[in-house]
Length: 472
Image (cartoon, rainbow, N blue to C red; front, side):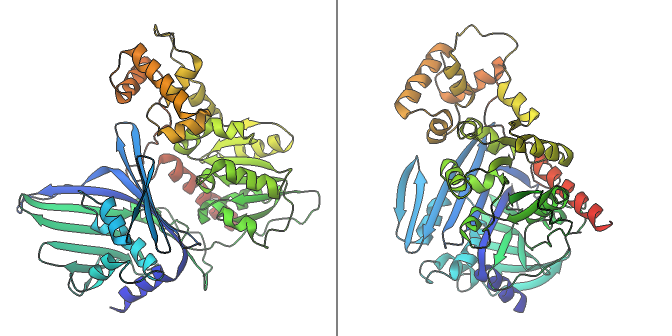
């Protein structure tokens, strides 16, 4: 059981931890073969450097996203439900609330292991129950290049698939015996990201992408990649700061741009307050994920530290179409999709450095697309803006369109009246039928990896760049 103890220690000792989880479910009688189907749901767990744990549950209904976020820090545990703050006496109660009515025992195990080093056993009683007492001592077996740890009790078996080299939980399979047969839930951890405070091991980034989705997961940010050595110290070069949470993507950007810019890079906004970044920068590339907690506050913080900096936002379609107008109001200099070709990115950087504004043409096409024929409903421009985003949460919609809730409510009532629609869901479906692109745009997923196609293409482009660089 030494390996299992090492896994627990790794999660406990990490300074920053995050993951993305995709869920597969199956149900069958005892004699049937279960057929797993990808659920329209996922979760994101983030253990921040300030010891705040954030759990985000998201489900897709048709083309629409329903999202709920739970946060815990110190002895305080709370969730946001219907845009209201709800507090809990313990972390256990918070998770029970999150999992109410669903089969989610395996979902938060890495989060709980990471959280266990910071709170008492009582606060993490679900973890202590999982590791012993309620369940048996884990049985260790080898399977398909993984170490599998099996925990069982009278009705449930939980199998934890561990990458024995990286000591990372890659998959959890939960099997539960119920009156109607057997229920299965499989949790695939797509992006486990560790930043250990004590020691970081430098490794080569030249791992190859294979057909297996779990091989693609190894191209994640679980290691620190060596920085490019092609940077010239010419005083005539502009200074570029890259803020990108994924180490492989960050290394790819550094490699391809280092011939034109003097580069520093980091994984998150917290680094802006560290003494390491005392330089003055001309440009910044920042992933929209790094700004998600509060875009306006984060942009303001950047401009406060670097008043004359040119800000270049990159991100996936869902994020950029959620905050497109907000970024424009904040006068960022460029907005670009994550899988933009490196040659186009270099050209765009030079364009904005010279004072221009750059919007990815693919993003511009999505945002400006209108039906071929004008509708009979005579919508105002503001009503069209709301109609295209009618499934967004009110708080986010108000922020994106810079509206107060009372005005937004009046606009929605007007839209529903004109469409003779009984609900906003019906209004959204009618808008799609008329030819309006619904925002934000839900990304298309790569069936082999579970990643969005944009993210997968960005990873492969970065890997190609790094492999090419190593040869020269």
